[in-house]
Each structure stands twice: as C-alpha cells, then as structure tokens.
Image (cartoon, rainbow over all chains, first blue to last red; front, top):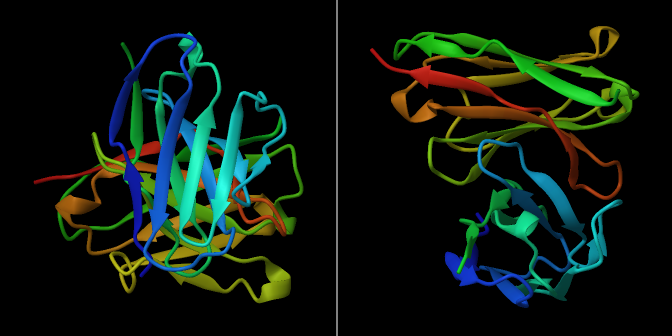
Length: 107
Length: 121
C-alpha cells in the first residue's frame, strides 16, 4: 500500500498568513493526488485534483504543486473560513489512501 | 439539486450486519464510479471501497480492512448506492460517506453528509 504522510499535523496561523501543507507519498504516484478541506461536523470538500488543478468554484488563493512523491498545498492569504482540516489523497493505485490530515488553527 | 443522501446508520452489536444506502439525485448516476469513505470519531478519512459503472461490469475494489465483510452494490434504476456490512467490529464505528468520482479525473467532487454507524454491545 502507498502511505501518505502529511506535515505538519497541525499549524497555527493568523488571518492573512501564507500557509503551506506538505504531503509525501511512500512511492512515486506521478500527479495522482488531490486535496480536500473538511470543517468540523461536515463532509469533505474538494480543493485540488491531479496535484495542481483547482476544482470549480474554489478560490485561487488555494494552489497545489508537486509530482512524484512530494506535494504541497498552499493557502496564499488565510481567511477565517479557511480554518479547517486538510487531507491529501493518492489514487495512483489501490487501495486509495489518505494522508493523516493537517489542522489549520487560529493563532 | 445535485446531491447524495446517506441513510441506514445506527447502533448495531458486534458481529451483526447493517446495510447503508446512498440516494443520488440531480445527475446521471449511472455515468459515475461511486465510492464509500468513512471517518472514525475524531480520526481521519479512510477509503472503504469503489464500484464502477455498468460499462466496467460494476466491478468493485475494497480496502483490506473491510474486504470479505463489506459489499458495495448499486441500482442505477433507483439511482442508489449500497454498502452491505457484515460481521461488524467495534473498529467499524464511523461516519460513512458516499462520494461521486469525476469521470476521467478520479477525484471526489460530490459527497453526502454521512451516516453514523456505531458498533457496540
């Protein structure tokens, strides 16, 4: 199975900050990675697919980069509505696997 | 409205069975692969399994943790997805989400609100 490791597990940031979340795959997954945002008590929402493409309706302050084993989700200017947990997911091979999540907290 | 609505969750004893349903509306259900994803209380997301569409023979994939115990099926005429869960264990306690796979892009663009399954004696 492909292991997905996210770092940090949590980050404290202020409104307006730039936040970067990392996701590392245990083997090459090309660009078969996506990112989801989950707020407390709600279903996840898609942000990024194919490592770098923005899901329709997602603001451009979110961006994804990387390929192979190392990937990054960046929020360019953190807003109050962005405080949530973020998950990466690989779909290169079965079983599909998620990272452990990164909680973005208010500083 | 485009939506997925799960139902069928509840409290069940270890070793028993439960069947979850996911009702789809507002889109052509038969055109999409569909997945189940679960989330144990206070934990992260865990993929449960997938069912492909008719042109792919409704074939399925499962996580190792549920393989042999859980079965995913669908009824395109009822635009519904199902998860039959047998031999339930306490570690199956979770919110179960159904999700739609974007054709060709492979990500989940639509999720239901989830249904809570609690396995406890």
